[in-house]
Image 1 (cartoon, rainbow, N blue to C red):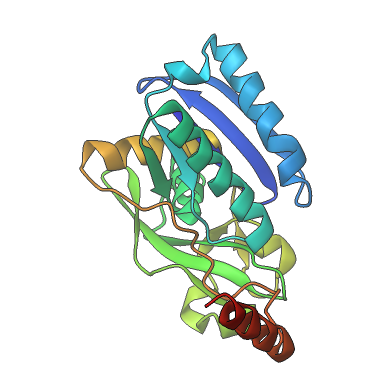
Image 2: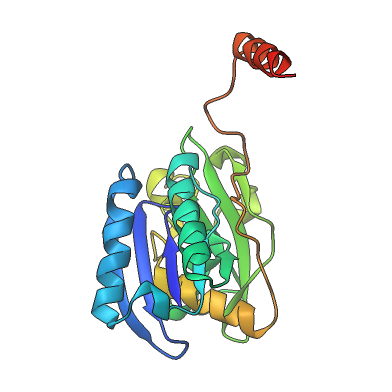
Length: 229
């Protein structure tokens, strides 16, 4: 399996054979997902001694995440899966962060914890988790909100992601990891497959992209479409 994610500051790729990690590559760069992703995929496959044709599955983080970076990962995963002829599996990126938090032991002893990542616009992507049978279980759907809108009772939760670094007055108990790990994402994907859970590969944006057609451009589009009839 090739796993990749571009929903956070990390452009992250891993090759997993279902039992162990064969290769992992990551770069921290919140502004250059396009430039880094393809070379990382190639490097990881070469390190694992594989070609794209050897892949059996592809897993990709579907967000939530900023529009541009998230789209790079999803398009790459879809195109590669189509080209190779293998299934493409979606994974909620916050779930991969939660998986790594549990695997690393950073939330040991907590009944509940949270994940909060940078959503830009002074907002965070946020979800709440518990630990069941050694794995995270989501207690709330992913949401985008202003840190000030996090309920008072949730502010003391151990929180993974970059949210606590950006808003330490709200998220008082930061824990690792800060960004998605493709290894953790692969583990979540493999568990989903084993349990017959299939997550689509549609982007989980949670809000509309910054770029929107203006009223004048909408009128122009209507006129152009009308001319074609």
